[in-house]
Amino acid sequence: MKKIKKVNFIKGNICNYKTIKKIIEITKLYKINTILSDISPNISGIKEIDNPKYKNIIKNIIILIKKKLYKNGNFVIKVFLGENFSYILKKIKNIFKIIKIYKPKSSHKFSKEIYIIGLKYKKFN
Image (cartoon, helix red, strand yellow):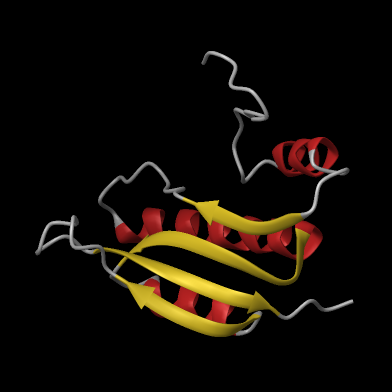
């Protein structure tokens, strides 16, 4: 990827703690008010394999939120309606004051793709 001014590009796996540490290190001097996530595991089509992978991704994103997002910060994540939706929604509801569900008009009518928006992070110290 070509460099972009004022952008730190990190290629890594969010499920590898080294990637989380790298993100924390690179952003140590910056305030983070919003985290956007468009992360999805490679889908096998076998829910017994896919669901734990997705839950692990969510667990690691929440670690990053708790380490870097400032109080009252915001979070947006693309998710797919299905078995993991209630799990993800519950995790996000526990740490944000306001939760919104959004399906863009540009998303295909039958697509299971939606966004969960968490507003006003409840910073726990």
